[in-house]
Length: 436
Image 1: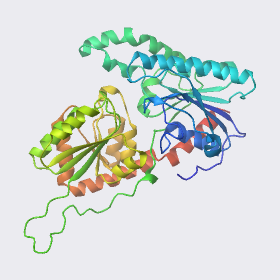
Image 2: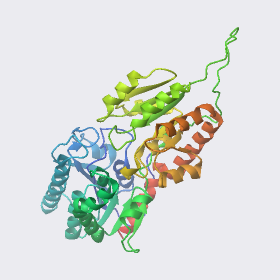
Image 3: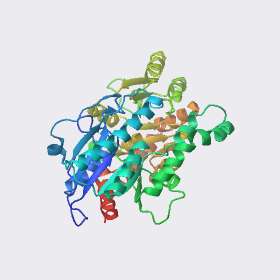
Image 4: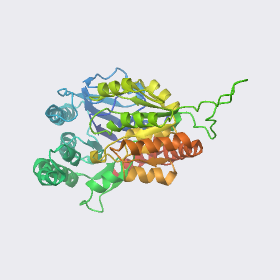
């Protein structure tokens, strides 16, 4: 990726601490996600950046270590905080790991400042979730006279409400008792924040509902790098030319669709096999690629093996970054199959699909669908309804002109809203202003 412009708005170099235990660190994957990107941009402007993260990789569910020479290669430092491992994203072990992170981060930071190993930070930006990291960051910011910025990456803890057992009316009654303590902690965090950033307008609106209008705020989507992907074709020959002497009508080229991401219960994955069966029954030639790993991977593999007919499903598992880029580059349609009750607004996969110029088929109402509609980047389907997904895919398989138009619209969406080379320098600009 081209280096970000090293022109700081701040009157002097700043010491910035980023507190996030989730994102991949250097050596784990490319391209950089939110915190790696922001750290690069800030470091390129001459700021002293330390990224505090966990020893357990949330994505890979494995112990991580920081490669030697990160400061020389990237311009910023990575400090690992020891935490217990966890295998399930929704588990007591994960909550315990979060507590480890907050407690140990605060202790290490205090010891490093007291010993003179580290200088006092000017800014501490901490991601929510989890709660424990930003709570420790808020206490440190008060003690060290630093600007505390809360970065809202999810509607936490409301996202857990879908896991409360029972019918909807019972969930509404029980959830406040189960989640009320976490909501009070979030409210206290907001009260202590000097500024708030968010990954979507939806998250900002939900979390800042009762916050002061004077509280500085900024929205920066997680984004993607359109520069990774080839430009989608402006014209498309979807009917191959007949061979010499061939009197049979040519076979249409299969529509290549892709779902990418975690294979867990919060995703709307049950519809994939159902849609594939229906597409085959209708004679629609298509391939549904599934890239990622999780608890549902083996179930999807069994479903894929049982399919026959004109539509097939191919489960790739967790791909390398280059393998992932290559897969998206040869597909036509990106499937954002996420349950709306997950409260996800604009997932990473949507940003990547737009960057790759894929027509987007989306289950999430609200902010993402509004962006898709504004740019003519795709269509909606109803989560949990395999027939609705089938109709969306069939529409693109039978109308390649519409497919082509949506692919161009998706690329325009990526350029306007998701291009990290544009949006993260603006994020850095804002951080420099709130520190003054």
